[in-house]
Amino acid sequence: MVHDLGVGINFHDVRLAQPGDFLKIFWSESIGATERGHLVIYLGLERKNGTVYLKYWSANKPGGYGVKSAPFSRMHNLIFTRITAPQNFVNVTKLPPLDNWLADMQRRSYTFAEVRRKCSIAN
Image: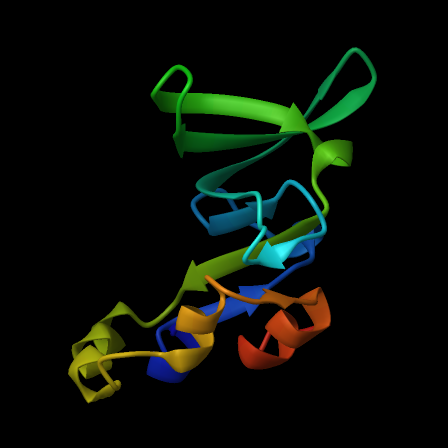
């Protein structure tokens, strides 16, 4: 939707990320029907006892809302979204009421390559 509306960019390279970017974390290789993922706000990378952690704001249980971090090595895939043209959200009424591709994610699994193509995620 971000690409379709022209409101921002999607990318997967953590080196391009900035605090405040939206981030979809995939905790396994599964995308779609059997997915284990989490949508958060990216806050940066930090090092704890020699291990790189990804720091994020989360609204997930346990613990509810707040700042959390997890070892970067636990994350299988990442999709960052940066909103660069919020004024284009007015175009949301031009989208169809149902996105069949997104709806199919409840029943079907996808590869990260398929998701990258559909969401216009740069290499």
